[in-house]
Image (tube, rainbow, N blue to C red; front, side, top):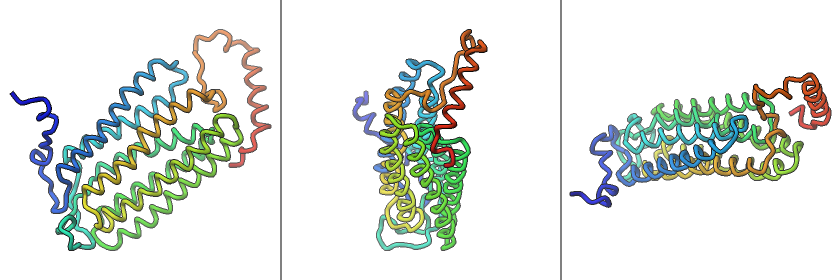
Amino acid sequence: MESLSAFVKRNDALKINPPSAAIHITSRGSDWLWTVFAINYFSLVVFLGLLFRTPRRDRIFHYISILTVTLSGICYFTMASDIGSIAVAPEWVRSSHEVAGATRQVFWIRYLDWFTTMPLIIFNVLLTAGVYWHTILYTVMMTIIFVILFFVGAIVPDTYRWGYYTIGTVALFLALENIVWAGITHANALGGNIKKFYTFLGPYVFILWILYPICWACSEGGNVIAPDSEQIFYGILDVFSKPILCWIILFAHTRIDITQLDLRLYDRGDVERNTPRFNEKEEERGVAAANNDPAQNV
């Protein structure tokens, strides 16, 4: 009978799903992808536990975090199984045996992951700073433009890919400008723990996300690093941008009063809420908040 340790060490993904490109991941790359998958789904279990300990009206950041790690985990399960990729001719054929070949493996599933999880990350981050909805939607659209253009650039086999890369990078920086500048401005206006926390969170996301174009240029774009190294680079960025970031945000919200962000929902059966006097108080609070908000023009 096969021992448990031998079962755990066995990884037959590339035998069951053989790569279609000459330059492709190896078993070591697949092992790393399984590791990232495990990190995401371990986080998912913890987040679900925290979810059921939190009142339903205060679960918005738990819901966003759970969706983020669930979708990212699906992506990494697929890539670790060596599924969800296409063979694309590299613009430059290198002499190194690790990146020598007529075609390179490009995981289209990664861009589907970015398309779904990066907007969730933006909601998680900017809602924490109390940023206005129109600013959040603009930032989300800029990020979607970045993802689409990077995907198109990855499958274009000639020098035109760098045009898509350049426009996509500009879109990413426009999104990051809102994450840092608008986010910090609003967080400073709210003050307290929100200000202290976002002073760290905004630059944290900025530093991580500017590394994605660098990884792309070295892997799908320039064919400089091997696919295994590409997976390690992207995997580290994704771990810090998704599960670890969600851990940080959920921990921070244990010290933040959600009513400061105007995100608190109320039970529909709350009798006091339905009284005229309650509604008058809410209107007075809204007027007072509008008159004292220095970030209203951001």
